[in-house]
Image (cartoon, rainbow, N blue to C red; front, side, top):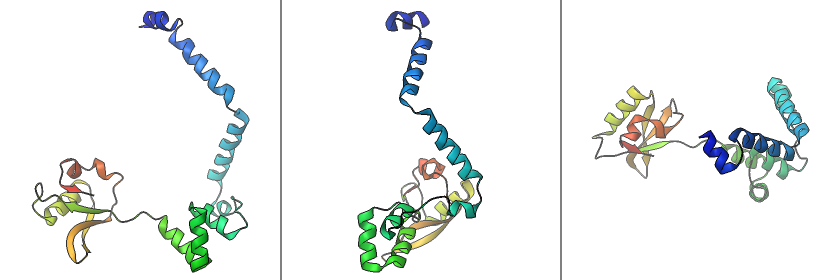
Length: 163
């Protein structure tokens, strides 16, 4: 392989890697990278109270809320105009929380919600609760031990439910 790469590339693979790294670092400002790494390390080593004062927030209320909660400025501005600052901060905080995970049983693969609940509790340690949407009990909501990945669950791979 080495000889083939030398014939095709006209040089060794190791030399190409070196050239790639050399060209990459030529465009990077190493001082800026070092500064950012040190700043991040300083942040991680700080206490919780120090972290609150670590960031200098914008003085404008709309800009501060938009930056603090990672929301679009136009949306924050319209919410502040309509609801005020306090309600806008509450809305932004609620918008940043993950929503509930609801599962619908596949009736072809799984005969009952109870069977699905028992399997997920046994296999994954996940606790489910029936959810009533539009007065129909067709979903199960994960209420505890939220999984890291639903797609990695064996019951999902076996087609027992959809999200």
